Image 1 (cartoon, rainbow, N blue to C red):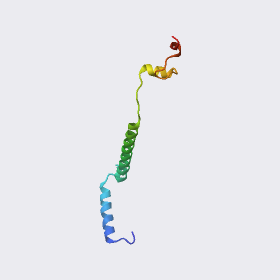
Image 2: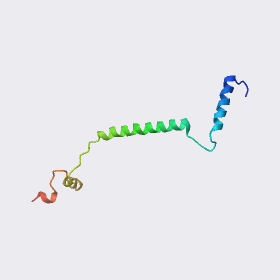
Image 3: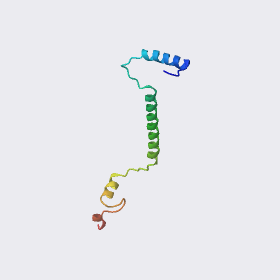
Image 4: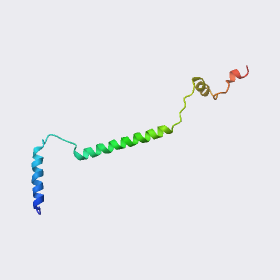
Length: 87
């Protein structure tokens, strides 16, 4: 390796020594894998927080069964059915 300073040579020697201690058949995710996993975790957390905020804005009131049946038959809640209006 040309133009290698003594400190670089020493660092490379230590790195090669450390690299020989690792099992070549073992694969680890390393720092990049941790960073990607952490970013994905933060993204899920932010999406869940946003979803909870949006779900809190929903105004949902459940109707009674009789009111739901009147609305589906075409009559609004509180309106009389056409067949019983004349009686």
